[in-house]
Amino acid sequence: MTTNISHTFSDTTSATRQRPVLHLPHQLETFPVLIVPGLRNSDEQHWQSLWQAQLPHSKRIALDNWDTPDLEAWKAGIRAELSKLNKPALIIAHSFGTLASASIAAEFPDKIAALFLVAPADPDKFHIAQQLPQHSLAVPTKVIASSNDPWLTEAKAAYWALLWGADFLRIKNVGHINSDSALGVWQQGAHELHGLLRKTIKAQHQVLFAGKKNRAA
Image (cartoon, rainbow, N blue to C red; front, side):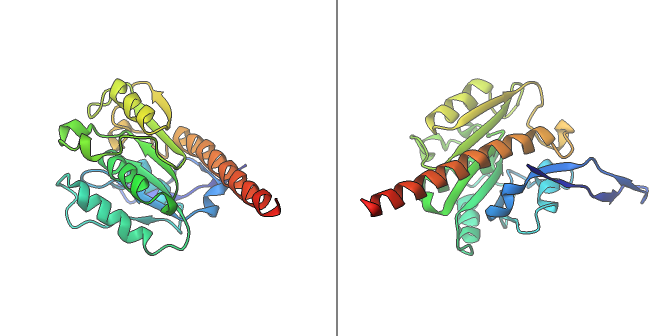
């Protein structure tokens, strides 16, 4: 089941036109949503921004400096938002933000419901590979990469997905999966997010059932 959402915007000539309908999974209402962009933040045409506009309960991390790839600063921004929540959050991250998000999930798995990691940046470019989790993450995780992403080869993306125990999807020739990719609301991404949420809710139900079974024993 999906929720149909449409919205309008003003272009540079101030004329209003209809954007494509965005189908976001209704399960998003179950989780707090945290948006974690990469370097230089996500502009208004980025799918992260378009999604956030349709998720009134979502929050974006705040940073003083979006232009310097500082893993600890990104992690601090994530921790600050998580500290305001009373239940585990779904993190929707892009590029450098995925690296910080995976790190936070390894450190505070009880604070994270699931990770949706799109177009990870290459940690070797920033000399932080050894600072990232070197094991499977304890939360449901989806990694999506592009075959021609200039920031990370698909082989490396698959490597990190495998290391983190994540489901992995490779999309053909969409660059860094950002505004330059001209994806609009990126309906394929919303579909993949739907699958991650179904998996997450199923896992939560299994844990709940196991707990009831143990108490009854």
